[in-house]
Length: 259
Image 1 (cartoon, one colour):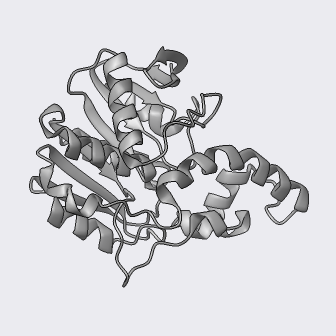
Image 2 (image 1 turned 90 degrees about the vertical axis):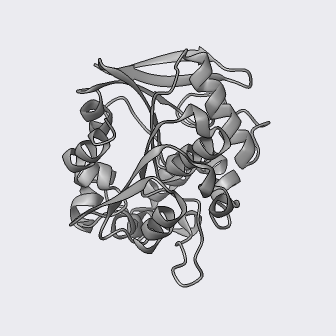
């Protein structure tokens, strides 16, 4: 069972989900946030003791206005790991969380031995521009995030009409706080120099990508693989950016190869 707890880090009180048994694993979520009912967390908790901190500004966590840039996010995340009393956990990040996880492994290469990056943000290629998540409307999200847009829409909206003005208003209000936090490192483009730091990563790394990812095109998978010396790529067919939802078992299996 996944429970919600609080730990005090130097810059903020951090809310985090915890559950499962086994080796410790830290999961950093993407810009869409995280809930205790997330099926991916439940799957990870079958084989690991999972810690999934909410990024400041998400859920009912503190906003921590002093966390302003990529270095702040990276150091804050290491502060959380330390506050949780963890040493060299398996480090897993999806999308924005993958960007933070990669930065953590680059800035403290001797403290991360196993790293799973699931369609991480953080690089930029003019030939394959990343869509602007902040100007994307709700009804456009499913096709951007999922291989199966219809199934993705049903999952995101629980059957509600994404073109209904009332839904749109609720969506914008609900997401303003957390996307405002995400924007500090993702807006206007998700590039903060990570490309020049990838060489510092010493961890055994697995890169996990959906073949149909339209948000972070698979070209970025090969750029990450080129930049991280001890890495391998697992490409998952019939999956988009939300590969952790569409192909949960395949993602968990890929993470398990880290040992």
